[in-house]
Length: 241
Image 1 (cartoon, rainbow, N blue to C red):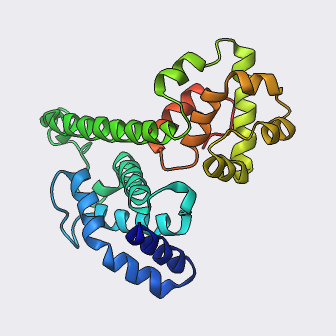
Image 2: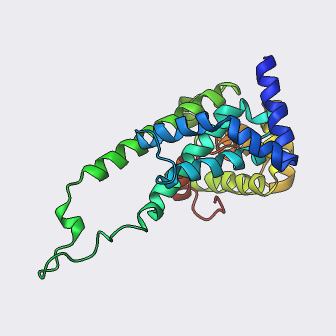
């Protein structure tokens, strides 16, 4: 506990002191490299793998965005690093300095990509699957603090479009008023009164779907980038960036 308190104090100091932030990043370089290694499935090469720089940037963002209500800092930082690395991998920026796979290699229009196997796709699919599993496991652990399970969320999901729209509206309000998310983490209770007054959604609707709303709001208190990506497809019509 003393060690955890020490880490929290270091992070809060680093929020206000650039030099302290640099020292913290230096102290945590083994941790940052380890998280990058997990993603790459091999140790990163300094000066060659851009992923290591992305991980360092994500760690710095973790320092700026951390609060005690988010739980242990290393877990929060690891989640943010993984999310940033996934986004970077998807963007394709890491391949911007190499020959395009779409460049024709023969007169018949055959491209370099046509000559490759689907091994890279299989590897990326494995990485994505592992990362998704990691996010779900972390979210499951966090929901347990609220007495909510994944089965509860599935059972508590709105069945009617009108109710789903109401939950969307409440979520959008919470996203615009981050103090609600902080209150959720601190009290371990859904701030129904504030959600009702701010969003205009009926109290009985939120109470009936409390477990579903707890899960939605928790997803927006941490770096659950993959899960949020899936939500964008479900929660259409709401600003859920």
